[in-house]
Length: 252
Image 1 (cartoon, rainbow, N blue to C red):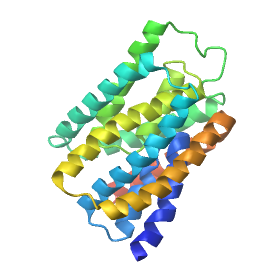
Image 2: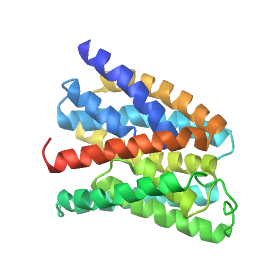
Image 3: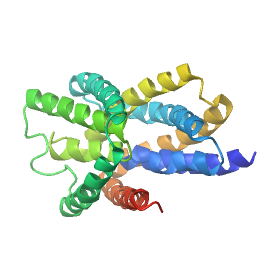
Image 4: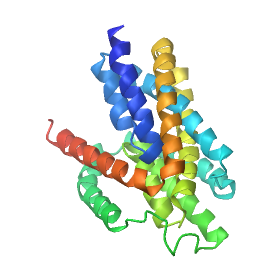
């Protein structure tokens, strides 16, 4: 029972954060590890609960009409492909390379968020051809899928920033497409973990219900609050991610 008391409240918080600005894995995975779940089982069980939550937030965005399937459908295929290639690449490349890059990238991204107060909601929003938006979304999905498979933390946040910044989507549309891409890669990874027999189903299902609650509430906040809700969450996620990367480099 101690595991459930530790994991479930933190999974609710992770679902809330993830549905708003991405980065819920920065909370959920450590929650399982703190509760004493073995690392490989923690990864697998976390993927199960996070997939459950992402299904809910994705369905809410779809129901509300915030998902552009012309861009999201091919991008989902690219995301799965990128995640597969990234996982393969991680076996042959030292992760320290990515961590060192992140030390430079994260402050730059944080500066972008501070400077770009509109988060996609400005005169440039939508000022792009449908063809170009689809191509850019596919390229972003492939690149971030590669990163997700190789390293992972903050993928949803980076997707949200690139979809609003490069693909010129408004915040709600970008959030909807981000959820579809996250769900695609999550399902792919979950099936792999299930095949390996590493999922703790009881803990995953119960904590997944709390994650669902967080995703449901958080997705509603995005649809009603837009950038006012998302910007501070993204800044918090970037700060936590930066501390984590620095900590890993110096073995804190």
